[in-house]
Amino acid sequence: MVTFDTVTIAVRNPRTGQLDYEMTPPTSEQLTTTCGHLRQGQQDWHTKGVNHRIEALQAWKQALLDRKDALIQAIVADTGRLSESILEVDSFLSGLDRWCGLAPNLIAPTPTKTAAIPFIQLRPQLVPYSLVGVISPWNFPLLLATIDTVPALLAGCAVVVKPSEIAPRFIRVMMAAIAAVPALQSVLTLIEGAGETGAALIEQVDLVCFTGSVATGKIVAMAAAKRMIPAFLELGGKDPAIVLASADVDQAATALLWGSVVNAGQSCLSIERIYVDRGICDRFVETLVQKAKQLNLAYPKPNSGQIGPIIAARQADLIADHLQDARHKGAIVHCGGTVENLEGGLWCRPTVLTQVNHTMKIMTEETFGPIMPIMPFDTVDEAIQLANDTVYGLSAAVFAGSADEAQVVGQQIQAGAISINDAGLTALVHEGEKNAFKLSGLGGSRMGPASIQRFMRKQVFLVKTSSIHDPWWF
Image (cartoon, rainbow, N blue to C red; front, side, top):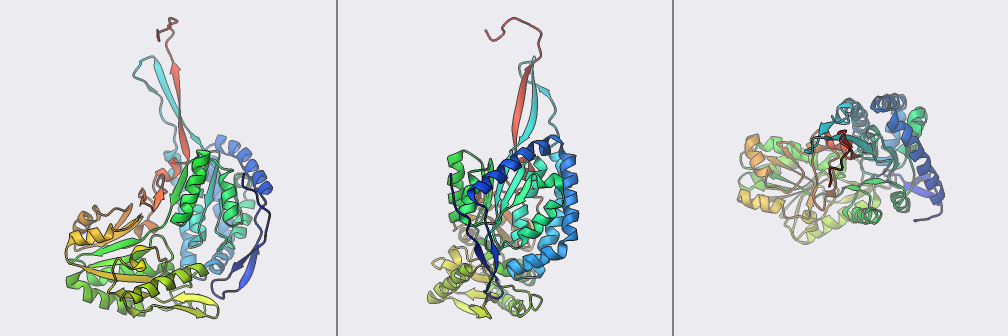
């Protein structure tokens, strides 16, 4: 068992660079006690049925609405950005309603049926995992802490969430809202902590959901495998976009700008490399640069512009390294291109690069910044080959004169979700089931019906209905 002592962790403010917040993780003994209480609460939570769970989650939603301003302020303090924080809270609350509406049908009892042996009756049922552990990242701290949590709760599980130590301020607001709903308090908690707390959590739960880097995801997967528990992993991406000759250049540039720089590019679903038909490439670059220059930093105030700060200091170092590597190997910077320190906060303006190639980190490694490197292609086959030249396979985008033309190309891309004539749609549309390809993830879809169903195991009772006493199996 992983054991550790409680050590206070100082948290950096992404807008000022100051360590202005502290959190104290639970000790290993406290974590064990917490998980034990949640397991006890889960039995009643499951037995009382899905309607009881929906009522509790709707009460939680009201408690959160009562604290909405405080929740937004906490996420703004965690991330340094405003508009995305408001969208994040609203998306979470609407997602609660969506899953509550879908849950009764998704976990409805399966009808009894007769087996191939006529006097054997099959009586199936779904059994939730008792305790689910969710380890979530810093880029969308609320949304990614709850995207697995809400379906698991509706399935009948208890859940313990360990958000990132880089963006933990929202935890206390969430816990205050949970405390207002006694039925939920016995099956849901959020804990503070860093990597050692996450490692200890994996040893306590029956299933783990992790969102984060490939390197850490592999560690989580191995820890889960040692305990023979499921691990659902949503990992990194280097999402490509292909712009065909028939595409609307202005529409493609607008969509790809949003898909590349929203949340300052700090999303695994961000577009990180763009391949454009050579015949329209110059016009596309000119259009994209013009649009990118119109966006401003959200500085000195969160509402001063559209581009927030780089949330994690170590990510700023990685972005700077990728940009330096690209310049050294011949890339041309059309706008942006540097990491700026403004009163302690770290910022990167929307950056458009050309003369890039796959020897550069900017085209092969996850950058997690508002960077748009552009390569021309001569044939569609070349574009597809370039798009698939990656260890990642999370999502992608294709632009063409018609949806059908774009989909023909999209069907050849090795990624789980392909946006057609738009970018990053899977971040906004959660109904479509998808699986990550390659190193971008493992396990069942966190989108669509599977998002709830993956938290339940199938159990069946095989019932002999014949009154014949002779031993038929001989």
